[in-house]
Image 1 (cartoon, rainbow, N blue to C red):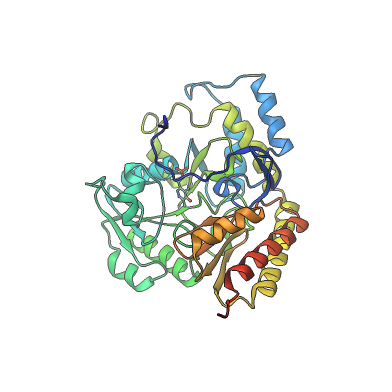
Image 2 (tube, rainbow, N blue to C red):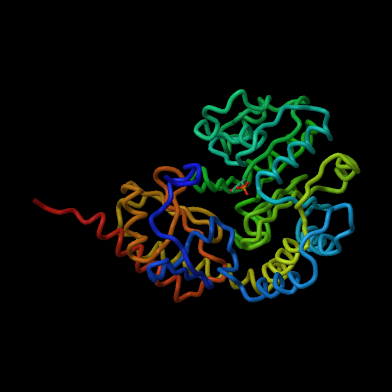
Length: 386
Ligand SMILES: *Cc1c(COP(=O)(O)O)cnc(C)c1O
């Protein structure tokens, strides 16, 4: 009997080693990792600059309380506000904690409790963020939930216009719904969210836990649209595997999180900040994302070209290197066969294959992945005439 709670249906392979896009299991089999720890290892496994930064910090100090100034927090905060529309950062340890902070901030700032989120959204597993998540299966058995979350259909401006009023603390959404099936927001909808939030004095919170830190080809995914959220939450890619999250907010929210109002023991500790600083130095470098976008264009064109004859592929969608392939084939079988061929990929709902290569993936590795995808899809879809 395992000494662990069985919260995860684990795969049979254990990863023993990782470098760049490649991981090796305990049997010595090598895979192309197009999961990246679920959009965490955006710079691949063990990127040298991040490893070096952590190693150097290990020799100085690991942890100090937030009762002391931590200048690395100031530096990482500065990188984040320089590359976003926000002005201040609060560091924490995970995506759920970042969203938890955002919900607390919205309640305190507005003095209201109601929060609008969207169907098929995913915001985390704590009480507030589970309550914010628009998927019944995540909430089952844990009720009563935190009060006053309303789930509206995504990309539906009319539904939002009829629900929002001066009792709404915030509207919270993912610019591309990751867990919910890789669905991107449309530009007009996001404009309307922003406008309706302004008119009603509600905060506009963008959950960039999966889409942020270069994943979609911009520092933050909201930057593909002409909008400015009041609050941005990030985590996954921020430490490239070192656990760290952050909530970013506009300057007018500063006084709401005054001394003693919110806190954390580990959030923003020197080791996490050393990792985040090195990650952002690379990802926010201008040339880096230009290269990423070239590779994204190359991959999406080649995917379309090489897979267009597969009738069981209904749609290829997403933004940047957050890619969803909607298919009518058996998902479990597809993932197993891809794994056997040496490609690790994820589901996003029952009919969507999700690909999250590291942003540092090479064109050769992209070619290899396409070959494997084409081979497996062809194997699975060739009709046997009896
Ligand atoms: C993964 C994820 C979260 C939760 O992050 P944790 O670090 O697991 O708490 C929240 N929102 C989105 C959009 C995510 O993809």
